[in-house]
Length: 221
Image: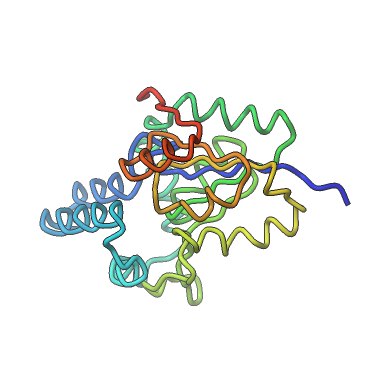
């Protein structure tokens, strides 16, 4: 069987100029669903995540509890409005061009993100991307339980979740690409033949320079 080439894209700070979680916190704060202290606490958790000081599984179990009892149908409707109002204006034009170039070359393109489907799926639909791997939330009878499904789509979890797609599409990783901004994605960067660093955080920037990986700084939309 003929193998295929893939292009995997992280989302936050890679395709988007911002972290979608921060946008969602802002949305909830403006709707009065959370207070300022909750915003500050979550932003602190994000900073610890960026420097690999955060137990991401433990954080996710706590952070998702506010979703308990909400229906998937309700969240999908909210997600479309959230994408149009908050997310869409933050998309890097250069990232869109990269996605389109890979699709035109016949590559398997996938968004691989730690965000939930309520953020990633509207973005994938907008970009015309067929494959989405993201952090999933547990449901029972159409309602969220407030618990994430493991593994989370972070770090080595991204590699685990990609395995099925790699096998189904017969992907040749040695000829494939991965775009990301975060040092937490080092396991997947090391897995592909064409690692591409975009708008990197300081640890990844240093690593990219050491390994002479291509590094790009996209212009804010």
